[in-house]
Structures are given as structure tokens and as C-alpha cells.
Image (cartoon, rainbow, N blue to C red; front, side, top):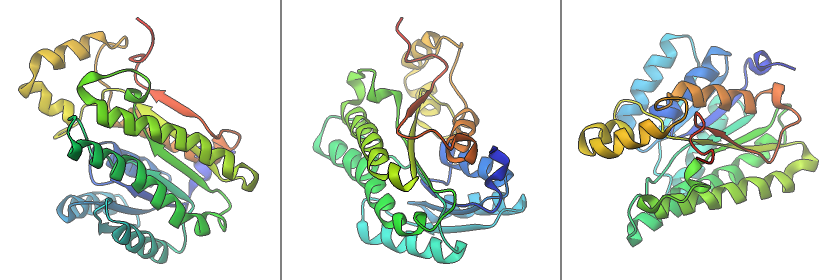
Length: 252
């Protein structure tokens, strides 16, 4: 079994219009997968669709507020209809709850955790009919490394890790694989670390210089791991949370 056996796989990606999500979509498209993307803003989705279609990909896009269960259901059902089913689900969206106020905590649990729970639950009937079913949740090394400046976000990601492992155990007898990837600090245009380059240059430099591989990661680094874990090449892997961080989470 190889990654190349992903051809014609039907892949849903929540939070797929930019950054890590778009990189994952692009990587799947290189293997001829068919894509169903959602994000909050339609403009970014349309740009992503145009870019992916220019490379020959089949892409369905739909704006979706992932804090709203009704909108999640509408997206999953529309994407499944457009693609003719679902083989793989990637939950990449985040509420970016980097404060410690109620709104940050609510955003973290609504989008980082519950959007994944709801999307996976709705996708399961389709996954049960797939020959290569897989779920991938995008977590963060913040789930395992205390990060005081992002308590709400980190806690939501820790809950997502536990959910990943528990769901994997629940679905193992059905051979539906469930894994997560935990990116470290990744930089891309318009992303958090790109913004901090100018808004918090001291923090940016401090974090960059502590990463053992010598700098921030690229979304393509995460995408490569994502495609592998969702592919038949990883057929014997489930219930794992893989750090993709250039050694950032290793003990000092």
C-alpha cells in the first residue's frame, strides 16, 4: 500500500482555504483526490478553489461557520453529494482562542473540538461505506507543552487529542482509522506567526531561535504528514498524535 493509492479519494477539509488547510488540500490534489473544502469566508474559498482547479483538481467549496451545527450538517451533506461520498475527513479549523476570556474559551471548544466531533459524526455513515476510511484531526504541540499565553487554545487541543485516541478505539473494529497531527510553530502569509513577525518581534525571534531545526515550519511540512496518515500507506496506524514541529516539543 502506498500514498499513490489515494487517487480519486474523496476528502473533506474543514478550514481549507489558506495556510495548513490549503497546503493539505494541495497535497491531496497532487494525488488526484477530489476535495470538499469549507471555511468561514467565501472569498478565500473561491481563491483556493480557483488555484486547485487550475491544477486539475475537482473541488467543492462551501462557506460554513463551524460553530454552527446546522451549517456543518449542510456542508457535509452537500460535499458528500458533490463528491459521491466521503473517504477521508480532515478537521483543520481553529477558533484561535488565544485569550483567557470566555469568548476565547468558547471559540476553542466550539471550533477546535466540537466542530471536529460534529463533522466526524456526520461523516461516519459515508466513511463506513468507504474502502479507505480515515479521520485526521489537526491538533497542536500546545496540547502537550504548557503555553500560558494560549491557555484556552491549548486546553481545547488537549481535549481534541483525547477525543482522537478515544474515537480511534471506538472505531478500530470497523477499520476506520483516526489520527491527529500536532504542528509546531508554522509560518504562512497572514497566519499568526506572520502577524507576530511585526506585532511581537521579540516573541517571534525567541520562539524561532528555540526550534531545534533552526526556524519555523512550513505548511507543506504538515501537509506531507497529513497525506501519509490518511493514505493506505498508514493502514496499520490509528490512535496516534504525530508532532510535526522540527523538534520544538522535545525536552530542552
